[in-house]
Structures are given as structure tokens and as C-alpha cells.
Image (cartoon, rainbow, N blue to C red; front, side):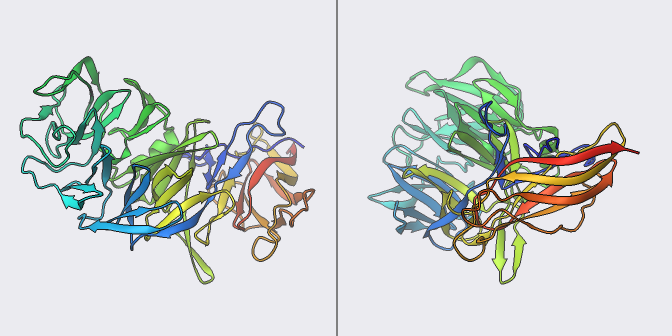
Length: 472
């Protein structure tokens, strides 16, 4: 039986018959040359509740001196490693994302209209200095908090080691190209000033009047209008460009990492200025998560493979499960030797958990589509499809004690799909030799398959094979 390749990434083209591949709540992991399969598909781990911090939803997270802090709704909470949530203040206006940074003593928060400083001694306070301006982003470098000045071509600094004090003269203008400053960021000891049409690189000269100066020739002609998409990972900055392309900014060189299908999804979002990103690493995978709230869509780039997949959350209500469209994870912290997530739905703080294939008890379906099978425009006849999976993963009791895989097929390139065929068992606990076969798959000039797993068990699709003949 020849192998049937399942998608190594999500790649639904504008023309689905060209490519309709999808991976949802799953990712590919490259293997050694002598492994049974070079591109097995693993189901993503679920979320286990660590704490409930207020009503939510989450707006941002930060590791401040080894303690996890989350902005939940309009309140600031800390959460300990054993799940104790403590309220530290409220009144952070708005409902959109916040940007956070610290200088070791002060935690600074901006929400696009106001700034806030939290200290252990004085709790949460509004920045009242009249020289402070509304900012979308804050980050810390060489003793200064740095901010963009919304609606201008300027960015500005706090006083040295003091986020409550500002001087109206401590600002600079980004003037290489017309356009507003949208964000500030820091990487490789360089200060990146993101504007709507370009990026400028500044460095710290140590001058007494204003310590930063633009780097000679330090202008990159790529813009960004989505300030919350700029994240550091793998020694680089990642960001969503104003041209709807997702980039890796390696030093001063923008490298396109999005694909045409991904860019189609981005362009179809009604708004991209509200897009946001976060990033985390697990077992050699470095994931950059792009949330598109206006499109209810979550796209994930895996740096280790250079491939994209989707994340999607569902909510159980009795016998009905309803999709949120996007992943409910809103922000992330790698802390306490684990990975914590703030929640877009409520005040939950979750732990990424390889032993849990639900999200707080809600069903977490995994979906994978095969590539389109065809042969020189001739009709193909498929007698049998067989999946090679990690079998015998059933739970001891309840749902998942006899885990099932659902299968459906398309003969028109993913335009329409059949009903789900008879389910096949992945094997009760210990049944490691379980085989999954579907007979009499029919014929067509092209054919593709889609598998779905909803049972809360370990998921690994090793390979797929089919009996295929070519004829009239």
C-alpha cells in the first residue's frame, strides 16, 4: 500500500482544490531518518486549571521577580506556583490587551490610554505625571521604560529607574519615513522603533541629555500597525507587517515566514490592528501564536519546522459543544518550570498539560486532513485506507476508555465532505496492536481524507496507507 500523506501544516488555498490541508490542535514533529515516519502528527496538549483570578478575561501577563502577574479584566493579580491568586489592585481601564514590563522594582502597565505602576510597597497606582502620554507598548532597556506616543511620530522615556517620573524633553522622533510610531521593542541591545511604514534601529550612547541615537543606516522599510504582535523568540523579533505578511526580523533583516494561504486568512480578517501574539517553547518546539480576534482565528507558527497549524477551542454545554473559532489562550508565561496561560473567556489561569487532552474539561478536537490524492487526471480506485497510530492509549474508565477516530472523505478537493464513516477504535488501554482500517473507499479523479479525534487521550498519527489503483 502506498503512503498517504497527511498535512504537515494548515494550508487552505483560495482555490481549495489546489490545497485544502489543515491541522487543528495538532502539529508535525520531524524525526530521525531511521524513525518509522519522518513527519508524525501529534495532538497538542490541553489546559489544566491552576487558579481562578477574578472574572477575566485576561489582558496580559508578566514574570515580575519570579512571581506570575496577570491583568484580569481591570484588576491585577499574582498567582503562585501552587495556584494561590492574590489581588493587588484594580482600575486598569478598558478591555483590550495591555503591555507590561519591569525594572526589578516597578512593574509598568499601559493600556493605550493610561499608564500604571505597581510596586510591592505601594500596590497599583496610576501614572499622573503630566509629561506621560498614552502608549500601546512599554519595554525596559538600560534603566529606562520606553513608550510609543500614540498618534504621533514620537517615542519617549521615563526617568532613569523611575516609571512614575517623566520629562517632557525626553522624547525622540522617528522621521526616516512619514507615519506614526506604533510600538517600541528591544532585541540584541538595540532599540527598535516600529512605525506604520518603517522600523528604526536606535542604540544607547549614554549621553546625558537623551541617551539614544539612531543607528547609521538603521532604517528598515517594513511597517507594523499591530503593536501587540511584536514578540521576541529564538533571538529574533516576530511581527505582523502592515502588508498582512508575518515576519521574522533577524537582526535588521525581515524574513517572510507566513505562506500565501496564511496571508489570505490574515487579509480576510476585518481588522488586523487588534491582532496580538505570544510565544512559548516546549520540547524543542518554539511556537509563535498569532491571534486574530476580529476573525476569531488562531494561527501558530512552529519555528522548529517552519510550519503553521490552527488552534481552536470549544465549550461544552450539556450534550452540545460550540466552537469559539479561536484558541482561548490569551497570554503566556514560562514560569515555575511550567507554562501558564491567561484565558480569553474567564478568569482561569491554566497549565499546559501533556496528560490532559481537554481544556478545563471542555472537548478539544484534533483534526488533520490528508493531501489530495490524484494521478495524472485519471480515476483512482481506493479499496482500503489504514491508519498507523499510537494505539492502546485508552483511559481506565469513562470517555476515552475505548477512544475513537472519525473519518470522512472528499472527492472534489475539499469543497464538500461525506458523512463520517464508521468510527474506528484507537485501542483500549494496553491494546497496542490495534489496527485501524476502512474498506471500500470508492473512486474519483481525486480524493482526500479528514480524521477527527475528540476523546481525551494521547494522539499521534504515525502514518497512513491505502490500496490505490489507477484505471478508467
